[in-house]
Length: 199
Image (cartoon, rainbow, N blue to C red; front, side):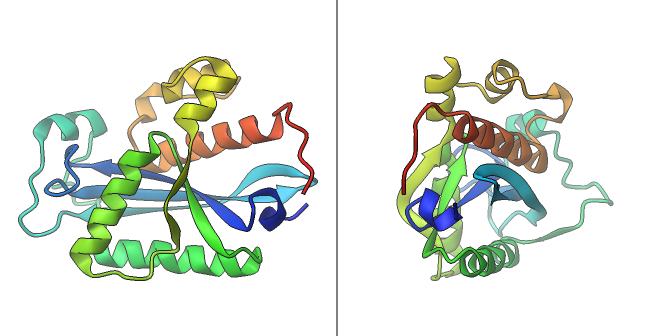
C-alpha cells in the first residue's frame, strides 16, 4: 500500500513546535521539528527527522515561564539558530520533495494538540510573507484525539506509556524529541488499529 492510498492523497508530516508563549501573534517559535514516516509492508515507520533552532522575530515577546518549561537557553553559544522564515522555508522544501516522491497531492499536519502548532505556523507564514504552505489549510490529524480513543489518555507522556512506547520525561518539551515520540505514537495507533482499511 502506498502512502497516497492510505491517507487519501495526503502525506502525514509529524510536527512539533516549542514557543516563547501561547499567543501566536506575539510569542515566537523557538524550535521547529518534523518527522516523516514511510509505509513498509503496510506498516508506518519513522524514516527521517529534522529540527531547527529558531531565532525570535523582531519585537517578539518571550515568556520566562515558557523558557522554564522548555529549558531553552537563548544565550547558549552552542544554539545554532536561524530566522523563522529560513527555518519554515527549509521545512516546506523538504515536505514538497517528500510529497512528490510519495506521489501525494498535499501534506497534512500530525501533531499533539495540532491546533496549537497549526496556529503558530500560520501566524509565522503571515508574518514572513510565505505563501506556498504545503499543509492542508485547516485539516489536521491530532494525536491527542487518537490517543484519547486508543488509550484513554491525552497527555503525550502517559499516552506513550500506555502504548508501550518509551518516554523520557527529561527530554520532554524539546521539539525533536516530542516530534519523534508523537510520530511513534501515531505509527503505533495506525498500525494496530482494528479498522480494516481498503483503498
